Image (cartoon, rainbow, N blue to C red; front, side):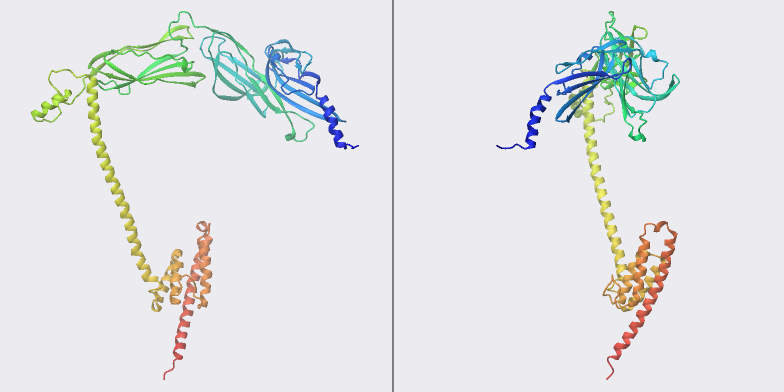
Length: 599
């Protein structure tokens, strides 16, 4: 018989008994962290299930009747003690009371097990108004009764007695309303009940989209503060604790549109309409004029702005552009604008009346209908100037031909020319002159390009000629091809002059050229090996280069002084080297002459 190992027994044990321990939920318990609770505070509800359960087994919908349910977190823990496996699942959620009174957290069911109901007492904030609170939220609204689409100014203030680690403030909520934050948050300090608070103020524009009675739900603040712990010696080990506060709800009554309103509904405290004529007040038949009309309304969104009426005499041709709308925030109010641009072409000369532009609106302050108006105005349209008298005299045949082909040049009482035809003829004339101007422009452009190329070529040639004029002089004075034995003195004098004048940039080249003459032109870039006295020159040149390219040489007086001293020493070493070379040269000449005695 085969003997099973200990590990096999353990596997079978957990397979049999472990699964049976996860089969059912043994017990479920619900607890809250405080009771009673003030209206603007939150309740932390904790539900603990003993046994195997799915993480989504908790259903918070039964709590929505009397509470606002916040975010729910879930955690699980499994432990094994003496082969006894125990699993626990914990749900933690935040509940915000909707109003004052006594409420019951109903029994909650988890996998067939039910919790016990919990009775919660919600007390008003005013009962503890004399007690300084650490954190709280207040709400305020400018109007509790308003008309449909009328803007309401809603203000939220968050009071903090100490700094918070992090936090967030949700926006208020209201059914059938557009809620927009106005501007940036304001931060300041104030003393309330003898305690100093840091106050964060935020404002919202609430525009109701339906009539009736609505509850404007206060915003919820969630933050974390440092939890005091006297057992910790070091502050950075302190743990944070979460705080939750909710602003008070506000009930508002939104009145419907009055029954006697027979125009597009526009409730506001101020509405105005303005016009602009960019071309001024001069009107000529056949010439287009742009008229810009702007409608501005306070406390409404751009979707509520009506179209701007456009009525003009039949003697005008109209070419409207698409209107533009926008909404901005200024001084705690929404400001909306609609702007229309219209090209107007008078077709006849004469005096005409542009009718007034009238836009009705409802003044929410006086509760009366008012009108934003651009008054009617009379404009005078001058006849189009055809410039017929300014045309040069031409023979009769061509004149008759032009008179036949171009009606605008006729001076008799033949069929009148309309403003549109004049506009077309003027447009053709402008296009023809524009083509001539474009040809002239391209011709001038080609000339400018050719001139620029000539200038560049001249500059390049000038530089080459300059380099060519400089190079022969340098080569004639210092090249090894022209420096023979008799030219050593010229190279030497040039080197001494460069060294005494401190021309460090030319020093190296002058030194190499002189040494090349000493070495019979065999090397320009190395010290002659047969001149032992040239070793100090290497040392001086290395030191001079080091001082020249030092990063602090430009601002260091000591290094300037040291460079000057090295140049003086270099001059002396050059003289010593030349003296030694002259002696050896003379001696070598005498020695060579003795090798060939006279016969």
